[in-house]
Image (cartoon, rainbow, N blue to C red; front, side, top):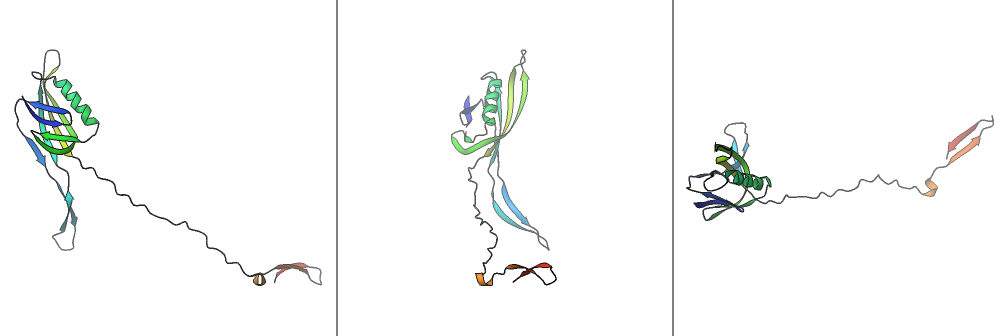
Amino acid sequence: MIEYAQWGDIVFELLSYKEHKEENSFIYARHETIFPPSSLQWMGKEGRKLNMTLRWHNQWCNPEERYREFKEEAEKGEAKKLIIATKVVGDFVVEKINATINQVDVWGRPVIIEVDVEFNEYFKKEIQKRQIKTKKQQAPARAKKPEAAQKKVVTKTNPDGYTYRRIE
């Protein structure tokens, strides 16, 4: 039995190695132009994706228990070191698990569980924050007029006996 791969504390022990697949993605922004062809602008690369198939057999482990442990670790959502053979590949999270129970014994326990796992490379990236400074908007201040320029309201009575107000 060989230790084929390890993700965090979980070791994948296999009788023989078959394969794993690696996927690399690159991001391009497409700028449409009036006349073809449109132009492309390289924006960067995405993290690698590794796909591997694991097979747990009841001859060397409890497949149900190994599958449960692996699922519990994946559900934590934590990035862990992925090691294949003796090479540290990087920090990866489990993005997808597809399990197939190939065979069960007479008691209904799985004999073979085959799991397709999709690992996604994890990069810790700080979210950039920008603080916006805002000024409080104040009502425009009214200029005070000098005392001499201020007007007064005067109440007067005319000779006919009517009272009126006048601004002076």
